[in-house]
Image 1 (cartoon, one colour):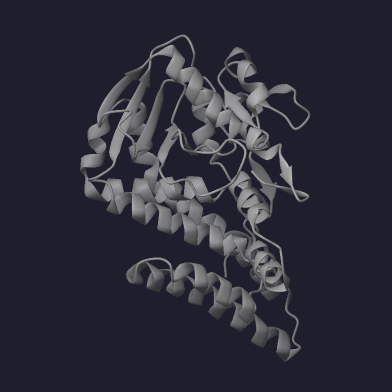
Image 2 (cartoon, one colour):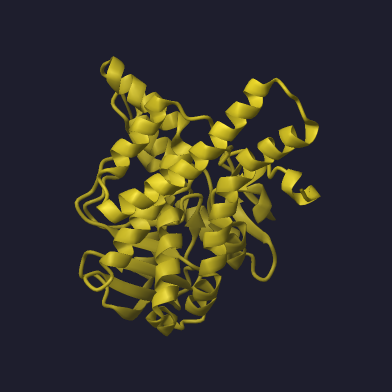
Length: 332
């Protein structure tokens, strides 16, 4: 076993740090809002990350049933893929249980187990980021035809789906919105929180699959911004900007216009609506301001820009969906 296999990754970014550097004007430093409401200028390594955010946890039969219950809502082929991934984790969990029951303690084994729990999901997300790198670079250069390659489209849609489901704002929003009116609902909500590391990945798979499957019906557009107001991004970079989306409640909307800023000048959107046509669309300043405000409203703490001037007007929008409470819970 190599030394690298024993190294646990502690700092887990739920928004890809390399993606954020597009707002760094050639550096790894960006302007962003802090938890205290200030604006900082620092490395992308400092934001949209938590220690052990993707660390796996032991799953009980209850956790597995909750996972499978959500998975069964997917098409059968996708459900089988979810279960296959789940079984891989359960086999590793079983192997650890056998080791624990043996009573033997081995320092190298302990280090390997810890590293495995810290690194497995982080490495899966890294593989999706690597797969989308070519596409993102091409789109940033307005080369929309990169997605005519079917493999590129598959990789980008899978990456895109996980950009929705892997973030801390999405996690907290979904878990806080779960009903807790009786013992069963409380048990399910607690199981979701415990198993979120797997559920989030599973949901990302499902979203990516659905976006790929519906690609001929949806409008995929590249938004080009040559105005004086640059696009900003956030700690939840893909947001649904369809007019039907509630700004005060975390409820499933009927429609989705998934908007993803790629740089201060370029964004990508997948539309149910007819607002944008497929292909390139040049946007005006009012549209940019509207999209930036919706990015900020669906963020939790950080909005990110290439200058302080770019993010300051949108500070008052930050976390708008997280401000109202109902029965003691954030209803996002």
